Amino acid sequence: MADRVRRRLGEIADLNWGDTNTTKASYTPTGFLAFSATGPDGFLPYHDFDRIGVVLSAIGANCGQTWLARGKWSCIKNTIRFWSKSPDADTEFLYWYTRNPDFWPRRGSAQPFISQGDARSLFIDLPDPSTQKAIASVLGALDDKIELNRRMNETLEAMARAIFKDWFIDFGPTRAKMEGRAPYLAPDIWSLFPDRFDEEGKPEGWEMAKLSDFMHFQGGTQPPASEFIDKQSEGYVRLLQIRDFYTSSHITFIRDTDRLRKVHVDDICIGRYGSGTGDEKDSLGRMCRGLTGAINVALVAVEPLFNCREWLATYIGSGDFRRAVSGGSSRAVQAGFRQSDLAFVSVVRATAEVHNAFEAIGTLVWERKKSSISENETLAATRDFLLPKLMSGEVRVRESEKLLGEAI
Image 1 (cartoon, rainbow, N blue to C red):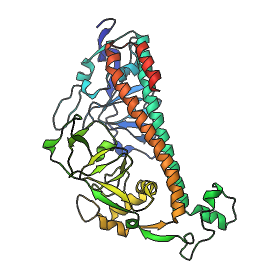
Image 2 (image 1 turned 30 degrees about the vertical axis):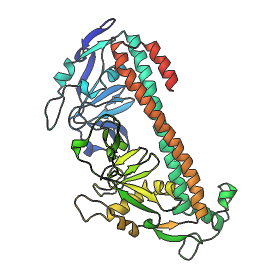
Image 3 (image 1 turned 135 degrees about the horizontal axis):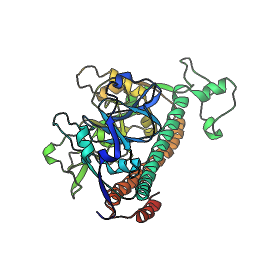
């Protein structure tokens, strides 16, 4: 390869196991970031490293996946960590070069793993150090923008949840009026809230209702796996599973028929089955939104019964909803919830005017989030297009910088 030097990873990198004596059982609520074989997923009260490095999942379902670590961090059992020990290699470049899980040779079948010896023996084609840094800078800028958009969406969601809690849980505006505090909402919205509580302690004129008064749902279907294809084709639609709302690594398409339950990008879906602990990582009760296609049997599509779509999106995304449906699902090993369970979930229903005001705010939040999601898809596609071409030298850094400017 022109203008490149081929070296083994073990020659240019300090590569070793993560701390084999530490497992997730040692994690603490706060502290320094820790990487396991599933990624940056916990904290420890100490850090082993204060530098930039690469963490490799060396065993299990995520075997071959890598993460770039910065600052003060540690990595635990079932990981390999490495960084450059040579002036000829840049650590961030090594991260991008080895980022594809298929780069890593895996042994075993039921439980794949990567050996240190195999990892050290892999060849890396190195351009000159300045080119390495430039390549890493281009790809890193795309990843940084993706992360910025992701955090912005988290902030927007937190704002919507805070407004929801203030209006519909804490009854903040009515409470403030009763205590004689100054208005903290726009006058046209402030005037929508009652001046006092009723005998039940909720804003006067509001009523207790059931979640079944807010929504119905329709379940998905489960086409046979023999009908799945992995590329878009005429007459086919995307099959949506819970995982598809969080990763694009296993996209599946099925033949379009009238039997399918289809959803639009704005529709709200809920994970219907799974463990019932009420944790946000559970499939059961997890809100899934932002894709168009046909849902499988593990998802249901929400049908709002009045102008409350964004109210439902915020409520369903809350821990209260997950705990409510998981509490009613202990009847089966593979827990789930039914339409009739919604009648046992009590919620407060405000006036139509208050709900309409929240919908206006929630819709603005959702539209901004959709825009960020769409932008991230474009950024990720640009990054994934450039990555192999930059590594091979097919695309020069100067050309990629032009594409970068257009993308961000």
